[in-house]
Length: 282
Length: 313
Image (cartoon, rainbow over all chains, first blue to last red; front, side, top):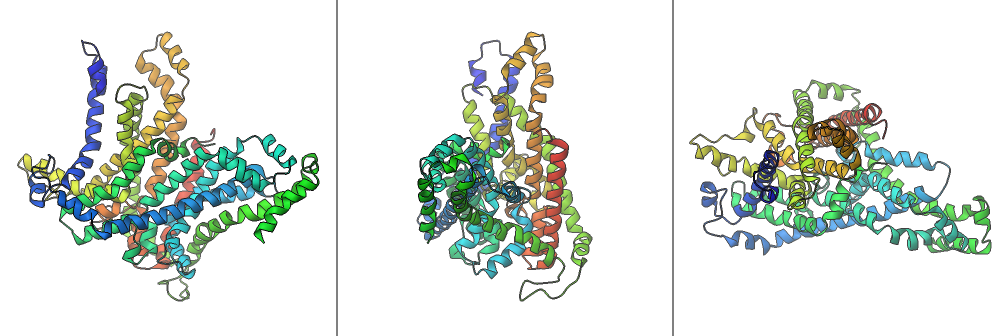
């Protein structure tokens, strides 16, 4: 958009086309988001006649009622617990496995690695019914772990792939020297590999977090109790209850996506790198 | 116990400092400890929650079973026949095909065009990149709800535009003719930014001298783009197509708040079909058969695609 302003007269038609094109796409992206944010400030009656513009009368109460409700915070808490479990367990199990595959030579190593990589081939949805029965038989139905453990299992393949590629770049000579000096593999992992790998750990952690935070299908299948619902389930229930009171639903949507947007603005780099990470395949 | 195991290799290595270097053999103690401590957690979780369920899906799909007790009512391949005889299954498959077609025909060119425009820095380019990427990080549930508002026949944005022209607002999501179209627009809205980022990352790692050389040799900007830049982007284009297809095969969260796959199954995807017909009714055998079919499609696709299109990567 700004390129048009900086260009000298006469305006280059290519630049003008570019500016118009970018502006149209920007409007296409922005309008639904802004209408959601602003819609939460309107009364239902005003929403009907004025869905696009600024509210003529700002209804702060729509937002404050939700912000002061126990329900909203409970949803966020549940989501945070499940996502944190998924992140911590993924980072621990995947980094240990990736370290072994990167630095420990043993018979069957490549076979076991290919076995793990099978996880890249299909989504969790294909096996969700047997998964439900497995989680039920393990007594984990309706628990945070019943959601988090399958999420960890399904994120392992990608996580091990990314971590192993990074660990492999740590020179083998460093490990050999450490072993000679009496350091064990485990200490090397703890005091050399992990500290050197903060960027990739952050990336893997971010992917896992965003995926788990946004997940709907697994919690939908594994949880029955409202009190345990993460926010995507909770917001669907909320929408069911307030079916056409769109001003309240829009305020609720805005408040539930706010944490994601804040996280995005704070950790742009890791998120973009993380979510497009599959692109730099090895 | 665990601590003793963890400590033992350090002691062992310390006693014979050079043996671990001389031959890899004597270091076996240390490696063994790592193997039995570091691999099992990941392998166990993966086997328990990923591999076994897929195997069990194949097993359960041979039963008529509601999930309680043990499966006893063996019906062989009948569940597969039932799935293939369901009209909704073919509709879902067609919809997945439509999603892929729209990804290829609209989303990919859009993403590529935007990437070419935004790869070079100018004032506002980074902000626009971030803006276009933003829909991708929003939860699909939230996106679906936002657009069920946008499309709402009484309060929505589309209805308001229609009314300003004096026309009767359409209920896009409630009609079998338009429900899938409405879903497709949301899919483009949500995912084009991701593909754009893939292309931007690729463009930024391109060797600029090749483009300059073409320009010096008299190629127009369009010719340089068409014959130098785009061919250099082929690996990324193939990757982007791969993600679009894989994404379509697992699309579910977005459809639920918009249409739940309806009306009359007109906007089901494979996974929402699986959910509506297998999971929500606890028809474990039938649902497992759908899962196995979906699994077969995913695996066949992944291998063929890899073999045909991504050989060089």
